[in-house]
Image (cartoon, rainbow, N blue to C red; front, side, top):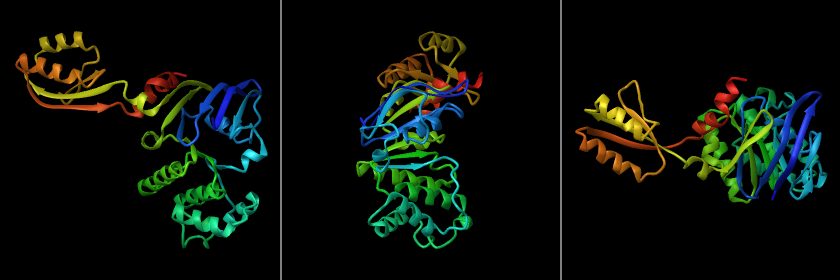
Length: 302
């Protein structure tokens, strides 16, 4: 495992930021780390990167204990809400970080990351003159400089427009294709759904669910039905068979099914009762729906 933790806990005085965190992450995947604001995600990332010491528990990253310097040499990290020196140019900043990493081929690596994040031709401008999106890109470039085996991205697309977000998605996919493990924290669930192989949900400092993305999203099928001739009597009958049946404001129906094979039987039942069908559209559950089921409603009441 490239990351493994056991009962990892961090307390600040009487407040517990992370509580008994158990993670087991295989190399070479994109791993999503999800939760509401204040759930403990950033604190956990800081412990994994060695920036914060745990109060208790243990863990390894890249086969080394948490905080080990030799493991840090193989990591990249883009923190949330980072800020670089406004007076430095993008090239100055990359040179500075290359010196911190003690890169031997820093010129080639700088050229590589500038091209990767789409800032070629912008490197001689001061960071203070960069747009928010460009600042996010230069931060990503700094994190990618050491060509890391493992990279932590904390809200990497937060300041980007749709084109920029797609560019970052493409970068993440290319990193995975090269064998890099990406640990991704993002509130943009559609972005997570598009690139992640596995996810962990954290709520109030505790891990509440971990699963592969394909298994997580294939548990239910939401079927949209548009039809004419559905009587209240038939609706009540169907509702006994499918408790999840709902009538929407536009007159359409939705029902949650366990399997695609249930759709033909439901269609046949509707037609046999004189209903005229116009549309039967199955939808896979989205990550947003699953997120709300796991941490949404309970989190809102806290």
